[in-house]
Image 1: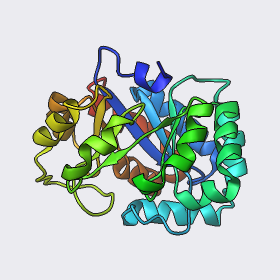
Image 2 (image 1 turned 90 degrees about the vertical axis):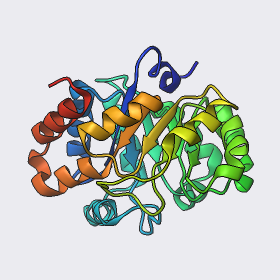
Image 3 (image 1 turned 60 degrees about the horizontal axis):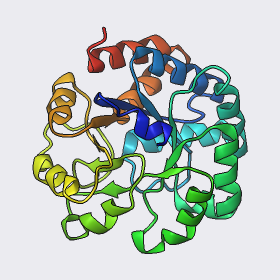
Length: 255
């Protein structure tokens, strides 16, 4: 069983997201440690990319800031390697297909294993083209986390049957960003997923309040919070760590 899957044993998981290199990689490392201490069970690290099509304005702007500050994939790998000396919290890369393809599927997955990355999410990788990377995620014991959207109904079985780690259930159509009203019938989609796999389901996109966390943890195995954390980093910059800690503690009920 992978470290990611183990994180779901006997509890609901809080999964936090931030963009690597925003405002710097030293601060990214500091923020990840603060997130874990505040109650994050798994942490997704966004690899900055020039065309992050699944992201809303908050995370798009974080990508721009990170790239402007000179953040590169090789530097991110180094940061994770250093981070692993201080924590074993499960780490997931959220990246796009182009950086992985350019690095080389085999080389990228091998490097992830070497530095201590546990899984990856590739939002723009079509299911029909994923076999070419699954060969290497399996080779290097990485979880390839599938996204299932509200429009995926006819494809749920196909998407869920070979998912590992957890399934990222997208709460709403569109891009990432905080939402006050999430109208998708999450319960029904989770039920369909559970009929074809025992892989845990985490709900993401839009979640930013304690009430939403409690609501979706009642039906799913965890929640993913990204834009709200990135927004704190945008507002407080290098001084964001205590604000992130306070927010996550509130979301997890550990304050």
